[in-house]
Amino acid sequence: MKTYTLDNGNIKAVFLSFGAILHELWVKNRNGNFINIIQGLKNINDYISDSWSRGAIIGRYAGRLLNPIKVKGKLYEIENEKGVMLHSGSEGWGKKNWDLVDLFEKKRVELKYECPAGTTGFPGKVQANVSYSIENNKLNIDYSAITESPTHINLTNHAYFNLNNNELIGNSFLKINAEKYLELDKSLVPTGKKLLVKNTSLDFRNSKKLGKIRLDDYFVVNQTNSPVVEFFEPKSGINMSVFTNQPGLVVFTPPHFQAICFETQKFSNTPNILSFPSTLINPREVYRHKTSFVFNIQKNI
Image (cartoon, rainbow, N blue to C red; front, side, top):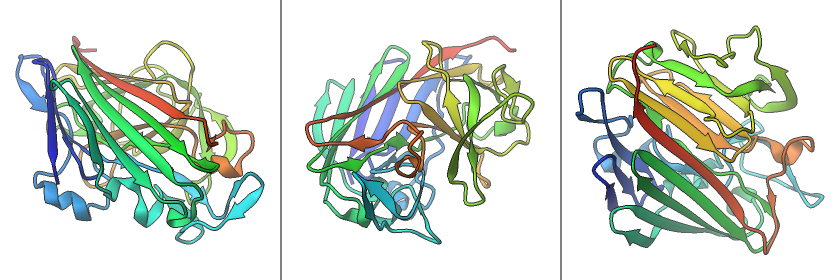
């Protein structure tokens, strides 16, 4: 397992070849001290058996999918548990070794992975690349992928954030630029319905303290130039803004450690829901996805 470090004096990030994992991310707090805001694992070998996908690239399909899926009118049986696949199943890319493409002056690292056709039931051999780069106070993640035959692709990063070490995540403030969220069934699979956040616990259009709410929900983000997420921790003073070109966002708070995930992606279960933005990629097409995390110091709300 290899490690790669990016450092520009404002941000320091450490990545692993295993799972293309974002292992550490060091930014300055209000006092000018660097703190690691990623809730990862101290021993990098522990990621091999980690069941929470900490910091990993999720592919070839993030989220939950009902079995079977349809590709160009043909049904494909995919690996599943009780009819549902989560985060691509047992052969997900977060458990694979990625090869180095380029490491540029501690400012950018690019990794690649080739997924054979038929893996966990998906058609098409896929070549995927992920590029992490830092500039000033920003971390960028650029994803791309090509396929030899039609297949569905939906990638994300599964980093867990805590902007003040082990501070209770409920003391942080969250704003989500979304008017709607996706209805989920009892297996947490989207049904196809989009519901208004207004008058629900999922209304984060204005910044509010997380408190005791637990989240594992899909938000339909507003397509604007504004951040899709603003996340603020009062004690550290760190404000994180998330920008993406993706239509959806999963926000997840794990039950047993103090952290939050912001999984930018297309909607899950899209192969089975025609009204959702398509995740189908054909040969000679390129899957592209960009997400950026911007860090600033903010006065208390």
